[in-house]
Length: 114
Length: 112
Image (cartoon, rainbow over all chains, first blue to last red; front, side):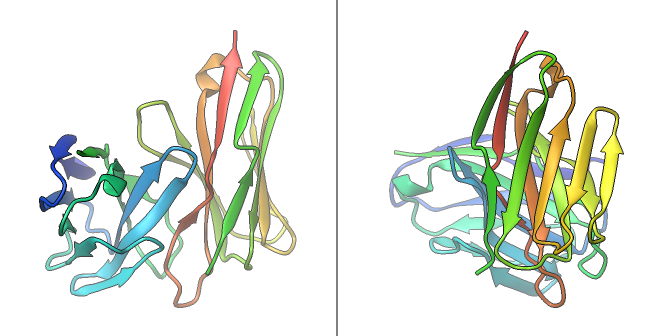
């Protein structure tokens, strides 16, 4: 099993550009989520999904869109990149939302917006 | 909204000293999880506590969940250089609230 796969690992964007961060898991996990990590701020939840076709906002959703058309994939879209979105982004998945289970994280995407 | 506070933000110890990080939630949690992130890496699950007053041990690591299920701690006995990293707690309120909220983490550095 590959686990949680994120692409790309690194990305530089210009202000105003859009892009999609990809996240895929092959563990048939029900719950998927996106976090951003900034120095001194810990991991902040952007969006999450409890199953295909169902998404909801986390703490810092502005400027980001998500969709969950399949169980495996949960892409994060930046609509118009801003320097404040420079961060490390982690995708995570868990087996179930009904039973408390551990989160598996991807390797992260380091995004710089100039 | 739910907040999870974690202290201290940083801790530097000499190898062999003990280390403790504390986690407090503004709301009662259904469970608390602990993760470790090595420098440059991604968070990796360590343990989950579910029951009020629960204590679990993993070798030199001891995890506790408070009686009110609003606080938790991680204690490392006799730190080693391999313990270096950031330790995060994370909690869920439960019921229909599925969000896993993380504390800001404690960065542990160990001087050999």
